[in-house]
Image (cartoon, rainbow, N blue to C red; front, side, top):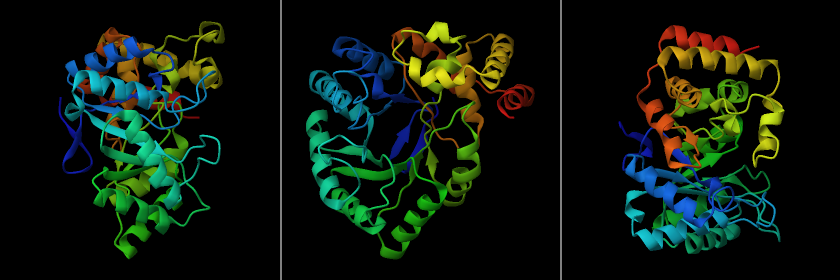
Length: 316
């Protein structure tokens, strides 16, 4: 696999990043450990998590994904094989929210403890905090880089304007800059990223690592109706996709998949990898054999006709 830079010359990722929100949610410890082993053994190297994963699940309070990863690091001794990213800023309850310097310094220690490691390769601002000056947030990250607890910083769920402003502050104040962006972007959900964020990323050479790359599983083709998704952990996430646009996209994915003799998931990820701003999409898997489609996607080069078929279906 050809490695790609996450915005730091020494932080290189395979073309797809594993979405660790499944750890401690749809996968238990044993299943998670098997998936992580299979992921690395397949030639991939990056795993994305966050302190808030998976607070949305009944009985969870956040920190579950990081805790599972920490157990795996301790058991396997393979921390140095993983490009590890985590995030701060989402609401964990009890006032644990935002990007103030005091909270970031507290949150990083909690994440590192759960992860049983002494550093993160990439630390994301999980969402913009307009109540905290950008300079204060960046100063906190500057301190953490000096301490060796993080190697670089990145942003998620920012608007193009706020991302550009943060970059201006970094330059003016000689503070660390966001070199990677994690936006909501896939074949169905396109407009916000392409209109607002992609121009900023191209202008400033920002690495782009989209989340929900497979639209919570919808773009794998396994859900063809709301009935298919009923009772599944992601049912609420995929509900909005069962409209005319979603059906057009599934039909286009079927057409292109048949032509290339592969799965819709591989085509969906290959489409993302063909977008000029995208570095490495995030995708999850629940069973080792699901990695087959992800491996195919890394080397699948869609031609102009295939890309046009997908573009036509996903617009309008």
